Amino acid sequence: MSLLTVGSVAFDAIETPFGKTDKIVGGAGTFIALSASNFIKDQRIVSVVGDDFPQETLDMLRSKGVALEGLQIKQGEKTFFWSGRYHNDMNSRDTLVTELNVLGDFDPIIPDSYQGAEYLMLGNLSPQVQRQVIERLTKRPKLIAMDTMNFWMDIALEDLKETLKLIDVLIINDEEARQLSGEYSLLKASRVIRAMGPKTLIIKKGEHGALLFQDEQVFFAPALPLEDVFDPTGAGDTFAGGFIGYIASTDDASFENMKRAIIAGSALASFCVEKFGTQRLLEITHDEIEARIARFISLTNFEMSTVVG
Image (cartoon, rainbow, N blue to C red):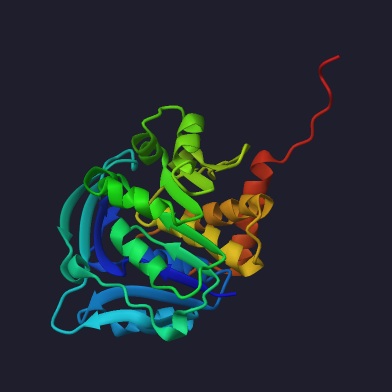
């Protein structure tokens, strides 16, 4: 099975209560690909960078099984850059700098070698770009998952609604779900959003876990209690990468397997926040992932005798 990811490959500069960084590698596409690489080795990425992007990072992605024919390198131009400062609660942040650079006029080009990918993950980009990718594929993937954010709901809602008609799984957080649906109850919100197109909805709730909705079925996955969250940047993209990477590796998009995929994504996200940027994702071993998934299972695995009678 093969996975096609579309998303930013970028630079970040981050400040948290634990410290700060200069420019480091980030971007939704990067986090998704690194996370998914723990489950699937046949990956393709569509993105764009400037000629300031480090060759060693490109080599690292290739070593993880990520094909880069669809990664445009614009000579004489700069890579997308974002800088932010997190508050003490680590749940809110201030954007200090956003420089679109090459991402400002990004035209996603799908190489012939990418056609036929069985799974597609659309990282957080403009809904117009996301739709262009779907329309430029000669064969529809088995499953199309997509991330978006409130920014696009604010400035491109109609474009977003058109793109939602074309996908299978939408991954957003609780605040975004409420904004998109106009409903405060997440159960009601899920029905409204799924009526827009995606059969399956995943609502991320940060340190409070994630919800999976499909038809009349609902699944709740807990978040792993962590003593310290060092840097939340990329955690949502890492979750999405773990989710779609697990689905693609098992070639099983059933509701039951999506439950397992959410746990896999949650486990990877719990590693991501332990260090700045992608650093922790580059260190983890399969044994560590297995052990962390086991910890997730233990959070909700219990036996109970009948107490009513």
